[in-house]
Amino acid sequence: MRLDPSVISALSLDPAATTVAAHGSSAFNATAKICATLTDGTQKYYFMKTAAGKNAEIMFRGEHASLNAIHGAVPSLCPASLATGVSDDGTAYLVTDFLDLSSRSPEDGTASPSGMSLAAKLGKLHRIPAPIPPGFSKPVFGFCETTCCGDTAQPNDYNESWADFYARNRLLAILDKCERNNGKDNELRSLVEQTVNAVVPRLIGDSHLNDGRGVSPVVVHGDLWSGNRGKGRIGGKGAVEDVIFDPSAVYGHNEYELGIVNMFGGFSKSFFPEYHDICPKTSPVDEYNDRVKLYELCVFQTLSIGIWSHCRTDKIGIIT
Image 1 (cartoon, rainbow, N blue to C red):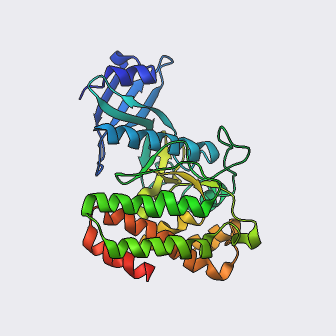
Image 2 (tube, rainbow, N blue to C red):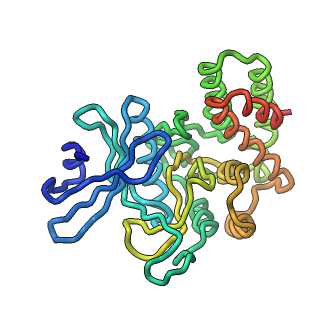
């Protein structure tokens, strides 16, 4: 397997001291492990994804920014992304710190993470305010890049209103993509538009949450199901940690994260109590379960782009 010169250049590696081999698997990309000997004689390992097409370039730019937003806030939670771009042959690439996923630590042979639990790390992540983007005087909802959930691009234009962002950039934007892929569906469009016009302001309206104070944007992973979390060593060094990967980040309401977490399961019984000890449920607390269901709707919409009939039924069930 040959490493493209553009990747060598982006990482400032010596091609004579660098090897690359296929590693792991992905539904959307080719994946590889890069092994390099640095000028000081140390070994460094990288993880690389490659794919062809403009959509891959968009996907990798979004993942690059997502990983670095999360890693910058809680470094032990995910690998840093080191480079993204397009190689000389037109193939898009993303290179990150190598994440050695394993259930056992070579130091002590146990399956326990060395640091904070996933709930504690996620709680810490969701307590850190979003940065102020250029052109604004305060943190707002959105993200600096388009991100992809699976292969579905999600627009992240900045918006001062969380309710408006969720309605426009998630529910309506994904509905438009569903209809482009699967044809017009008047019944579903009517239900989604009713949800946007009535349910969204009722449950997550800016003047409704937290006694009218609204919510503050924090970075969320955006696609945190059990398949995008594990135990591993970032950079292949140190002890085993609870880690997450393959993010589709946005600066949003922290409970938005919990829609997909709750929907697919795979998290321990202690996860939610420990998380909410750090990040209490948004007020009104008695509407928490309804908000999580509303955020699950976005997940069903995204899935229905590819598996229409099954997810359409589930989606309508949530709305009604």
